[in-house]
Length: 47
Length: 469
Image 1 (cartoon, rainbow over the protein chains, first blue to last red):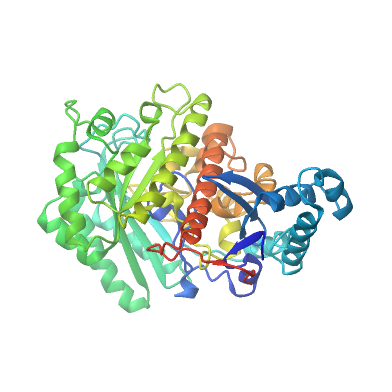
Image 2: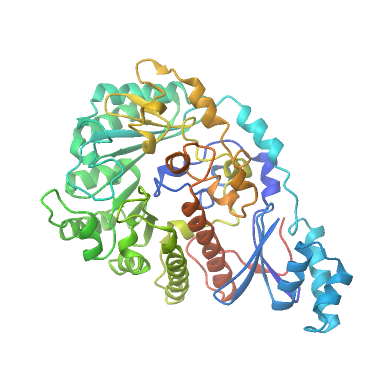
């Protein structure tokens, strides 16, 4: 495309099918302890 | 729903519901803005043909339509029903925050635990209480294999023998029950020694090392009770500790306040000390505290995040990159949408345990008697509170419904919401502003690194001509 470049992303809709296993880390157990951040969590299913 | 913004010379469009990120030129940025307002091709041509050639506008419009058809632009929110079903499932406990010591050898001025005491008495957790907590976790974890236990305080090294004994107990039990304990420790570093470092390197999946940045900033907020600063004591210990664990599986974590709104300098100071896994959080404090972040500080903080993001791109180019917790965003392999919608798990999947064995929804609620859920002896006795937490998600919070960052913070911190608004179903507004800015910066960094062809340590997104599904 000439006008738009799309970053390589995992489309969220696709995670509806296989997601929800719950094995991932609890967000406040890492470095934050005050602000809830999940965007940087790792999916245990993709490992 | 889309969110479009300009940052560091990039025009960025986030398609909120698919999570797709587009880096666009000026003409398509304007075309997308009008499309978002409901304009059709004719309307766009009528409004923009004085500024851009018609052929350019038509081309940009066509590209937008292609992306829309591919399901990566102007996508619908199809998750609400899914989250309701998901949240209705029986929950299991998968993480504990063990308050191993309600005591501290520092007197940090912003401590929400009030020098470790949490509005209560000084106390150390006994092995017996800790053991019952681990038993409870195993018994209520269902089929979850990975179980997380954070040794927290106060200062957990003030009760070190119990930490070691609980780790040994956990290792025995995980074999019996086919579980995998991931132990973590949060420490101020004062009592760190070789024996503790060696043990942690063997047993702790992550360690969080509290440091606020430059010496004068750190010492101002993190003194000993005598008033003396702690920087000179802890920095060499942290450097040794991090090197001894192979420069990985740690965070140097700080808190910034009204007194260091130039906190990017503190983050860069961490990097200059040789640390690469960094986190710096805004203080959450009563509005009348002198160090509290105020609404009027926000523009300055936003600039500071921009400055930090720009500096990170530059350092990455120089091969001196580092990771900043709040700018880390995994576009290709991040969490599933369930995780993104359903919040942090406090009060359901995640519990805090006091030294005497009481359960609270999380460490931030400890000492708030209204949120006492039960204890290690009787289990959860207030299922009504648990249910309230269970229902909490981005769709139950009116402020989240129209927020582009909702799938990156999953509704924010319930404790902050409660402390500022008296309910867990609201949101802490200053925190939301900051979260949105951090998401914008995080995405910009991905765009910049991809654009400049710089490989990032944790796999930057690649610019591609076509959307990926």
